[in-house]
Structures are given as structure tokens and as C-alpha cells.
Image 1 (cartoon, rainbow, N blue to C red):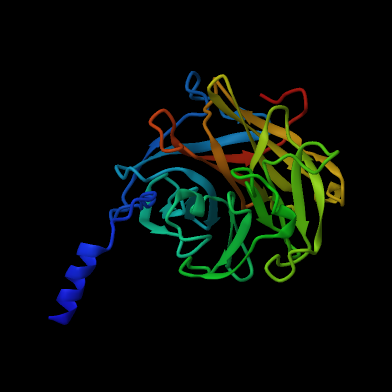
Image 2: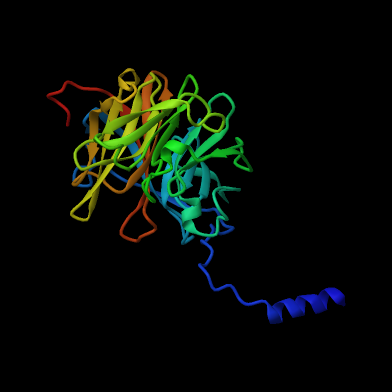
Length: 330
């Protein structure tokens, strides 16, 4: 009886919440479907763009209004993990016939601030430690990195590096990856330090949560009118950077490869362009990239952020890296 009276008094005298509404969450039904998509809708038989050979792709579709907004992805065997810029986690298996199995939905278990607003969970980048399985996530508005356990059930550590403290909102660690010998590299959409060009890059010498001040800065010079949206490590140790641009109400993406030997303190680093996705080819707001090896082939996967708008799509594309002579790139 006392509990009931307290509950009634609470309802009567505690004012209703009048602040921002909580960000929506994915629903209990994790089902979604896929539809095949062509590299070139005008010529479905086309397979090559630059140094890339198209191996197939699908559009991901769900009735859940919160589904989409994917900004990064990871792959282990045939098991995908997609992370949205609202902290939503979508996992599934994809077989050789492009059929999905074992779908599941979840949300980041912890992160910056309360998680009540979208800016608290603006998770733009993700990288998995191949040794421990720990998952690192970069949060754009908070200029912070959080490390999660391999099952994404709890956070283990986090840091807001001092070198990123002045990065503006919505221009934080858009691209990030763990380095094979330890450490981390990140590139923001923010312009670099005074007197420099391109975009701000930082190489952390070790685990940033242990010592965020060990490392150095460099400048990444993206392709014209572009900004980095994600990066990943190729099997041979080179860096693959996904760059995005928006003009005339259309997105396009350019993939570049950087030799890590060129990345030194204060260096201005340009990547070699290997392929461009732009009209009339399939194009959208591609924000996530990962690379794997199938036999001797280097395979590249891209995922797009549909911004949860009906005019955009959640696309998952697969390519093989197959360099060609400079004069025969299409």
C-alpha cells in the first residue's frame, strides 16, 4: 500500500519531461530483406570501375523505420556487423547466394553522455582488434573513442584525446582503424592545424586509453572536393580510405590507397585513386569500408548511410581489388 501511494504521489507531483525526446531504437523484429543491385543500371553486365571488379551487391530493406544510417561495418567470415550513426547494431550472416541469415538487432550498451540524444551515439567509425576481438568505436560529436568487448555487451574503456579536443561538432573521427603493430590512426573531416592543408590525421603510438598523448599528427589530402568517411587496413598493410563528396544533390565516392611508409610526423599524405562511384554508376552516401582476403584475392566491402531518407538506400557492395594498366581503368 505504501508503495502504491508513493507511486501515485510521484505521478501527481513530478513534472513531465519536456526536453528532447529519446532517440528511437530498433524494434524487436530483426528481419530485413535484400534486393540485388547492379554496378551500372544502364549496363548490368558491367563489372569494372578503375582498379575494382564488381562482385555483386544488395540493397537492405526493413519495415523498421529506425533501420539504416549505417556508417561502418566489420566482417568475420560470413558474419557482418553494421553500426549506424545512432548507435544501432545490425548483425547477420550472408551466404554465397546473397541470402541473409541469423539477423539480430541491438544498441550500443554504453557510450558518451546519456545516450538519450542522437549526438550522444553518433558512432561514425569502427575497428576490431584481430587479437582480442575488442571493438573500437569513434564518436564524431564527442571526439572520443570507446572500446567494447567482442560481443558488444559492455564498454571496457574510453578516451577523448586532447589533440582532438578542438575538433568541431560533426567533424570528428569520421575514419579510424587499429594498426597491425598496435596503435590507432584516425582522420577527421576537420581542416588540419594552422598552416596545413587537407584533413587532420593522428597516429596514436599505442592504446589511446592508456596514453592518448603518444603519437603524431599528419595531414591527409583527399581527392578534390572530398572528405574521408572511413578507412580500413588492406591485407598487405596499406591503408584504404573511402572519401565522399556531395554536389548537385548527389553523393559520389572515391577510394584511395595510402602507403603507411609515407605517413610521418607533419607529412602531407595523398592517396592513389583506385576507383570512383558516381553517376551513372551506382552511388549513394557510402560511409563504411572493410577489406578481407578470399584466397589470393583482396575483397573490399562498402556500406552506405541512407540518412533514413526515402530518396537514399542502404547498400552493401562487394569488389575485388584488381589493378589494371593506368590507361585502361574502365
